[in-house]
Image (cartoon, rainbow, N blue to C red; front, side):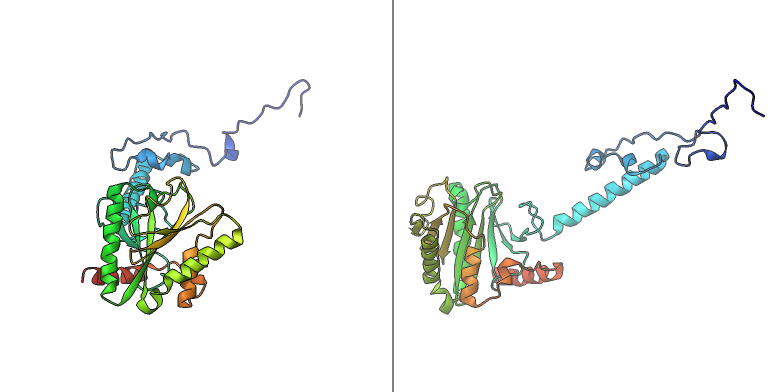
Length: 291
Protein backbone atom coordinates (compact mmCIF):
# COMPACT_ATOMS: atom_id res chain seq x y z
CA UNK A 1 0.00 0.00 0.00
CA UNK A 2 1.43 3.33 -1.04
CA UNK A 3 0.96 6.33 1.24
CA UNK A 4 0.74 9.72 -0.39
CA UNK A 5 3.59 12.10 0.37
CA UNK A 6 6.06 9.34 1.12
CA UNK A 7 8.80 8.14 -1.21
CA UNK A 8 10.45 4.78 -1.23
CA UNK A 9 13.85 4.92 0.41
CA UNK A 10 16.80 4.17 -1.88
CA UNK A 11 18.48 0.89 -1.20
CA UNK A 12 22.04 1.10 -0.01
CA UNK A 13 24.47 -0.25 -2.63
CA UNK A 14 26.26 -2.21 0.09
CA UNK A 15 23.21 -3.84 1.56
CA UNK A 16 21.51 -7.09 0.59
CA UNK A 17 22.58 -9.42 -2.15
CA UNK A 18 23.12 -6.70 -4.78
CA UNK A 19 26.46 -5.61 -3.29
CA UNK A 20 29.04 -5.13 -6.02
CA UNK A 21 31.43 -8.01 -6.00
CA UNK A 22 34.44 -5.97 -7.01
CA UNK A 23 34.37 -3.88 -3.84
CA UNK A 24 36.93 -4.55 -1.19
CA UNK A 25 35.40 -6.22 1.89
CA UNK A 26 35.14 -3.98 4.89
CA UNK A 27 37.26 -6.28 7.04
CA UNK A 28 40.10 -6.45 4.49
CA UNK A 29 43.30 -4.68 5.33
CA UNK A 30 44.46 -1.99 2.91
CA UNK A 31 47.92 -3.03 1.82
CA UNK A 32 50.91 -0.93 2.50
CA UNK A 33 53.61 -0.51 -0.08
CA UNK A 34 56.53 -2.66 1.06
CA UNK A 35 59.90 -1.02 1.46
CA UNK A 36 62.46 -3.05 -0.44
CA UNK A 37 66.22 -2.69 -0.34
CA UNK A 38 66.98 -5.14 -3.11
CA UNK A 39 69.05 -4.28 -6.14
CA UNK A 40 67.75 -3.08 -8.60
CA UNK A 41 65.32 -0.85 -6.69
CA UNK A 42 61.65 -1.71 -6.64
CA UNK A 43 60.65 1.73 -7.88
CA UNK A 44 61.78 0.75 -11.40
CA UNK A 45 58.99 -1.73 -11.70
CA UNK A 46 56.12 0.58 -10.88
CA UNK A 47 53.35 0.18 -8.35
CA UNK A 48 52.43 -3.49 -8.15
CA UNK A 49 48.90 -2.69 -6.98
CA UNK A 50 48.10 -0.93 -10.27
CA UNK A 51 48.34 -4.25 -12.07
CA UNK A 52 45.55 -5.80 -9.99
CA UNK A 53 41.83 -5.07 -10.05
CA UNK A 54 41.39 -5.91 -6.39
CA UNK A 55 43.37 -4.83 -3.42
CA UNK A 56 45.54 -7.66 -2.19
CA UNK A 57 46.64 -8.36 1.34
CA UNK A 58 50.01 -6.88 2.22
CA UNK A 59 51.72 -10.27 2.34
CA UNK A 60 50.56 -11.14 -1.19
CA UNK A 61 51.80 -7.83 -2.56
CA UNK A 62 55.17 -8.43 -0.97
CA UNK A 63 55.37 -11.92 -2.43
CA UNK A 64 54.49 -10.68 -5.93
CA UNK A 65 57.00 -7.87 -5.66
CA UNK A 66 59.82 -10.14 -4.56
CA UNK A 67 58.95 -12.63 -7.27
CA UNK A 68 59.16 -9.96 -9.97
CA UNK A 69 62.42 -8.62 -8.58
CA UNK A 70 63.91 -12.09 -8.49
CA UNK A 71 62.85 -12.72 -12.08
CA UNK A 72 64.36 -9.44 -13.28
CA UNK A 73 67.56 -10.06 -11.33
CA UNK A 74 67.91 -13.55 -12.83
CA UNK A 75 67.43 -12.12 -16.31
CA UNK A 76 70.11 -9.52 -15.60
CA UNK A 77 72.55 -12.25 -14.58
CA UNK A 78 71.82 -14.16 -17.78
CA UNK A 79 72.32 -11.05 -19.91
CA UNK A 80 75.71 -10.40 -18.30
CA UNK A 81 76.98 -13.67 -19.78
CA UNK A 82 74.93 -13.55 -22.97
CA UNK A 83 76.97 -13.00 -26.15
CA UNK A 84 74.88 -10.08 -27.32
CA UNK A 85 76.73 -6.94 -26.34
CA UNK A 86 74.97 -4.46 -24.08
CA UNK A 87 77.11 -1.59 -25.31
CA UNK A 88 75.31 -0.61 -28.47
CA UNK A 89 71.78 -0.42 -27.14
CA UNK A 90 70.52 -1.90 -30.38
CA UNK A 91 68.77 -5.08 -29.26
CA UNK A 92 67.71 -6.09 -32.76
CA UNK A 93 71.12 -5.93 -34.44
CA UNK A 94 73.38 -6.01 -31.41
CA UNK A 95 76.73 -7.61 -32.28
CA UNK A 96 78.02 -10.82 -30.73
CA UNK A 97 80.82 -9.94 -28.38
CA UNK A 98 84.07 -11.80 -29.15
CA UNK A 99 86.90 -9.90 -27.50
CA UNK A 100 87.37 -6.73 -25.44
CA UNK A 101 90.45 -5.70 -27.40
CA UNK A 102 91.08 -2.52 -25.43
CA UNK A 103 89.15 -0.26 -23.09
CA UNK A 104 87.89 1.68 -26.11
CA UNK A 105 87.30 -0.96 -28.81
CA UNK A 106 85.89 -4.47 -28.97
CA UNK A 107 85.62 -7.13 -31.64
CA UNK A 108 82.24 -8.63 -32.47
CA UNK A 109 80.32 -10.68 -35.00
CA UNK A 110 77.08 -9.62 -36.73
CA UNK A 111 73.95 -11.13 -35.21
CA UNK A 112 72.47 -11.60 -38.69
CA UNK A 113 73.63 -13.80 -41.53
CA UNK A 114 77.18 -12.66 -42.43
CA UNK A 115 78.29 -11.74 -45.94
CA UNK A 116 81.26 -14.10 -45.82
CA UNK A 117 82.80 -16.54 -43.39
CA UNK A 118 84.38 -14.75 -40.42
CA UNK A 119 82.70 -11.44 -41.27
CA UNK A 120 83.30 -9.35 -38.14
CA UNK A 121 82.85 -5.85 -36.69
CA UNK A 122 85.16 -3.43 -34.92
CA UNK A 123 82.98 -1.35 -32.58
CA UNK A 124 83.84 1.55 -30.30
CA UNK A 125 82.51 1.52 -26.75
CA UNK A 126 82.08 5.28 -26.58
CA UNK A 127 79.33 7.17 -28.38
CA UNK A 128 81.22 8.13 -31.54
CA UNK A 129 79.40 8.45 -34.89
CA UNK A 130 82.30 7.36 -37.08
CA UNK A 131 85.98 6.60 -37.34
CA UNK A 132 86.70 10.15 -38.48
CA UNK A 133 85.36 11.60 -35.21
CA UNK A 134 87.41 9.33 -32.91
CA UNK A 135 90.14 10.51 -30.60
CA UNK A 136 93.74 9.55 -31.52
CA UNK A 137 93.94 6.81 -28.88
CA UNK A 138 90.66 5.25 -30.06
CA UNK A 139 91.75 5.44 -33.70
CA UNK A 140 95.04 3.74 -32.81
CA UNK A 141 93.13 0.94 -31.09
CA UNK A 142 90.96 0.43 -34.18
CA UNK A 143 94.03 0.52 -36.42
CA UNK A 144 95.87 -2.00 -34.26
CA UNK A 145 92.93 -4.42 -34.27
CA UNK A 146 92.43 -4.07 -38.03
CA UNK A 147 96.10 -4.73 -38.70
CA UNK A 148 95.88 -7.83 -36.53
CA UNK A 149 92.92 -9.08 -38.57
CA UNK A 150 94.78 -8.38 -41.81
CA UNK A 151 97.71 -10.50 -40.67
CA UNK A 152 95.35 -13.20 -39.41
CA UNK A 153 93.51 -13.59 -42.72
CA UNK A 154 96.55 -12.90 -44.91
CA UNK A 155 98.17 -16.10 -43.66
CA UNK A 156 95.11 -17.93 -44.97
CA UNK A 157 95.20 -16.38 -48.42
CA UNK A 158 92.42 -13.84 -47.88
CA UNK A 159 91.97 -10.11 -48.37
CA UNK A 160 90.14 -7.91 -45.85
CA UNK A 161 87.73 -5.22 -47.01
CA UNK A 162 87.01 -2.69 -44.26
CA UNK A 163 84.12 -0.27 -44.63
CA UNK A 164 81.81 1.98 -42.65
CA UNK A 165 78.84 4.16 -43.58
CA UNK A 166 78.31 7.28 -41.48
CA UNK A 167 74.95 8.52 -42.75
CA UNK A 168 74.22 10.48 -39.57
CA UNK A 169 76.45 12.15 -37.02
CA UNK A 170 73.91 11.19 -34.33
CA UNK A 171 74.80 7.51 -34.49
CA UNK A 172 75.64 5.94 -31.14
CA UNK A 173 78.71 3.87 -31.97
CA UNK A 174 81.26 3.58 -34.73
CA UNK A 175 81.11 0.22 -36.55
CA UNK A 176 83.80 -0.81 -39.01
CA UNK A 177 82.97 -3.95 -40.97
CA UNK A 178 85.73 -6.41 -41.84
CA UNK A 179 84.77 -8.74 -44.70
CA UNK A 180 87.46 -11.31 -45.57
CA UNK A 181 87.34 -12.86 -49.04
CA UNK A 182 89.59 -14.94 -51.25
CA UNK A 183 92.56 -13.02 -52.56
CA UNK A 184 91.68 -13.71 -56.21
CA UNK A 185 88.41 -11.83 -55.73
CA UNK A 186 89.62 -9.33 -53.15
CA UNK A 187 92.35 -7.97 -55.43
CA UNK A 188 89.62 -6.60 -57.73
CA UNK A 189 87.66 -4.98 -54.88
CA UNK A 190 89.23 -1.49 -55.36
CA UNK A 191 88.09 -1.42 -58.99
CA UNK A 192 84.53 -2.42 -58.06
CA UNK A 193 84.23 0.22 -55.35
CA UNK A 194 85.82 3.01 -57.38
CA UNK A 195 83.52 2.30 -60.33
CA UNK A 196 80.41 2.15 -58.09
CA UNK A 197 81.24 5.40 -56.30
CA UNK A 198 81.92 7.15 -59.61
CA UNK A 199 78.59 5.94 -61.01
CA UNK A 200 76.86 7.11 -57.84
CA UNK A 201 78.23 10.61 -58.28
CA UNK A 202 77.24 10.65 -61.96
CA UNK A 203 73.67 9.54 -61.21
CA UNK A 204 73.12 12.14 -58.51
CA UNK A 205 74.72 14.91 -60.63
CA UNK A 206 76.46 16.34 -57.60
CA UNK A 207 80.01 17.51 -57.24
CA UNK A 208 82.64 14.82 -57.40
CA UNK A 209 83.09 13.65 -53.82
CA UNK A 210 85.33 10.61 -54.35
CA UNK A 211 88.37 11.04 -52.14
CA UNK A 212 91.36 8.74 -52.32
CA UNK A 213 92.56 7.96 -48.81
CA UNK A 214 96.17 7.02 -48.10
CA UNK A 215 97.07 4.59 -45.34
CA UNK A 216 95.96 5.98 -41.94
CA UNK A 217 95.10 9.33 -43.54
CA UNK A 218 91.32 9.37 -43.07
CA UNK A 219 91.29 11.97 -40.30
CA UNK A 220 93.26 14.53 -42.31
CA UNK A 221 91.52 13.84 -45.64
CA UNK A 222 87.86 14.64 -44.92
CA UNK A 223 86.14 17.14 -42.56
CA UNK A 224 84.78 15.84 -39.28
CA UNK A 225 81.46 17.67 -39.77
CA UNK A 226 80.35 15.71 -42.86
CA UNK A 227 78.75 12.32 -43.31
CA UNK A 228 80.79 9.90 -45.38
CA UNK A 229 81.31 6.38 -46.68
CA UNK A 230 84.75 4.86 -46.23
CA UNK A 231 86.25 1.66 -47.64
CA UNK A 232 89.74 0.31 -47.10
CA UNK A 233 91.58 -2.70 -48.49
CA UNK A 234 93.90 -4.62 -46.15
CA UNK A 235 94.20 -1.39 -44.15
CA UNK A 236 96.23 0.22 -46.91
CA UNK A 237 94.82 2.74 -49.39
CA UNK A 238 91.10 3.23 -49.79
CA UNK A 239 88.31 5.53 -50.92
CA UNK A 240 85.89 7.88 -49.23
CA UNK A 241 82.64 9.31 -50.55
CA UNK A 242 81.15 12.42 -48.97
CA UNK A 243 77.41 11.93 -48.56
CA UNK A 244 75.64 15.05 -49.81
CA UNK A 245 72.21 13.43 -50.06
CA UNK A 246 70.67 10.13 -49.06
CA UNK A 247 72.81 7.08 -49.67
CA UNK A 248 71.83 3.43 -49.46
CA UNK A 249 72.82 2.12 -46.02
CA UNK A 250 73.75 -1.19 -47.67
CA UNK A 251 75.90 0.36 -50.42
CA UNK A 252 79.00 -1.68 -49.55
CA UNK A 253 77.01 -4.87 -49.01
CA UNK A 254 75.50 -4.54 -52.48
CA UNK A 255 78.93 -4.22 -54.10
CA UNK A 256 80.40 -7.14 -52.17
CA UNK A 257 77.29 -9.20 -52.86
CA UNK A 258 77.70 -8.54 -56.57
CA UNK A 259 81.35 -9.57 -56.43
CA UNK A 260 80.54 -12.83 -54.65
CA UNK A 261 77.22 -13.46 -56.45
CA UNK A 262 75.24 -13.48 -53.20
CA UNK A 263 71.49 -13.31 -52.78
CA UNK A 264 70.15 -9.81 -52.15
CA UNK A 265 68.35 -11.08 -49.04
CA UNK A 266 71.74 -11.10 -47.30
CA UNK A 267 71.59 -7.32 -46.92
CA UNK A 268 67.99 -6.31 -47.73
CA UNK A 269 66.33 -8.65 -45.25
CA UNK A 270 69.07 -10.45 -43.33
CA UNK A 271 68.04 -13.45 -41.29
CA UNK A 272 68.68 -13.13 -37.57
CA UNK A 273 70.77 -16.02 -36.31
CA UNK A 274 69.55 -18.26 -33.54
CA UNK A 275 71.39 -18.41 -30.23
CA UNK A 276 72.87 -21.82 -31.08
CA UNK A 277 74.15 -20.58 -34.45
CA UNK A 278 75.61 -17.48 -32.83
CA UNK A 279 77.49 -19.60 -30.32
CA UNK A 280 78.79 -21.89 -33.05
CA UNK A 281 80.07 -18.98 -35.13
CA UNK A 282 81.60 -17.35 -32.08
CA UNK A 283 83.52 -20.48 -31.06
CA UNK A 284 84.68 -21.01 -34.63
CA UNK A 285 85.93 -17.43 -34.83
CA UNK A 286 87.67 -17.69 -31.46
CA UNK A 287 89.61 -20.76 -32.62
CA UNK A 288 90.83 -18.77 -35.60
CA UNK A 289 91.41 -15.59 -33.61
CA UNK A 290 93.49 -17.29 -30.91
CA UNK A 291 95.46 -19.53 -33.27
